[in-house]
Image (cartoon, rainbow over all chains, first blue to last red):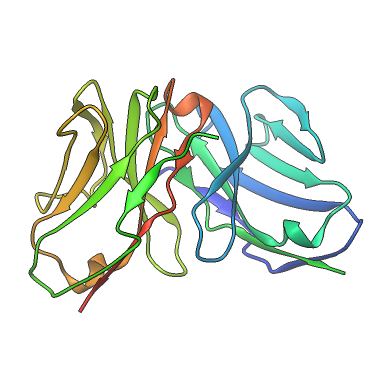
Length: 110
Length: 114
């Protein structure tokens, strides 16, 4: 069974600080990695995707991938109260479906 | 910005009844998906659909489930005989180039089976 693991949190971060969200996955053959944001009662919203080892930056968000350690992370710089949400890590194991983690609930404290 | 549209936003049905959940994917997208999320649980894959046929389905997607693209715009999920455990948020998603580029999810249909 191919698994995606996340710490469910909650993770509390002061406004303006860096929030760090982590995810591990079970299959070394995994190809594509995604971070989605989900506000309570809403649908997942794609923030970033990453395929290659290293960092990928988009505005305040940086995704980091380490395939040897089977680890992907999301950093949110200058955290804002509007960043308070559940962050879902999702992995494609080489087919058309995404396998999601349970999500990490992030709260930004003003 | 283009959206995936789902209707209805909330449906209540009696156990054993058939329901049809409707989705209008983004117009130039070629790959379509259904996911569900039981309250407080993970988002779970149900089915993917490409070129007018199912490309992959999960063990959840049993004979009670079916999908259809009846015309050039709609994509539907039918549950033939609903069970209490089918109560969940159902999300439709679409993608222009497949999973590698991520999906756009619709706003979801909350299905409540009583």
